[in-house]
Image (cartoon, rainbow, N blue to C red; front, side):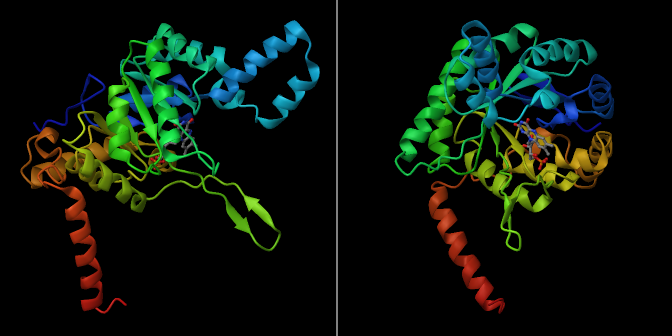
Length: 335
Ligand SMILES: Cc1cc2nc3c(=O)[nH]c(=O)nc-3n(C[C@H](O)[C@H](O)[C@H](O)COP(=O)(O)O)c2cc1C
């Protein structure tokens, strides 16, 4: 029998499938269904920094009656209770989820600045979460703030969360950092055991006829995987940290590519929203078939086989590939 097992955040997993943070995890029957289909772990939808701060503000208002500042602050933020049950409901749900399934339950905190809200990391641990994913969803748009300052804020945040918990910690990042490998090295030193690559930005589009900005969440496709594959292949064996891929994992071949790049696990949301969580069982079958056809015995055997590990200087390799690509495009008259 072929061996699909891997490890992530210190957990031995039967296979590399993890349900990515999303409302897919928000009811227990759905959790059971995904576990039955073969899912190895699940990340719950996020609890947001702003939500936690807002609740603290409401309490402050109730005690001090600062009505004006309270209403002004509230008017900014969408009510997210329907999305994730709110801070208290979230903690209760962790307890319920732990009773419903045996697979690791990873709580998700989503924020961008260190602050009192990180105490929820500890509360999630106390509620029974097996690990924590910290999503640093940040769009640094202030021309006065340097890349160094942005990265240091991420590190401060990770250190603040690490100080609250003893659980394994993963950090979900965007692809837009100046020196991702260096940042990830610093994240490891700050106490992260894994990075989740990469956040998808829900880029708004313009409606030029009505001068509107359209905010619409579009599900991903496999072509979004390439940035992730590239970075996992670059990082594998160079920074000793677990690597999770999120963004564009749809097919069995996508999963195999991630493993060959060097990922520990793949995380899926869009594909499961499109096809249902049972889809995992079909992907597992297809992977087993592919491994049989290509005489692989285990996932471990392929992990990192297409990484840059053996390139002495990946940046030279990258430059050469880039130049070759341009030359070949010319030769094949693509231009
Ligand atoms: C409806 C929906 C809700 C999501 N909610 C969250 C969230 O609460 N926290 C988070 O970190 N990511 C969230 N994500 C992002 C996913 O976890 C995932 O990183 C992203 O969708 C890329 O993976 P995919 O290509 O498999 O969809 C959400 C995605 C979708 C589609």
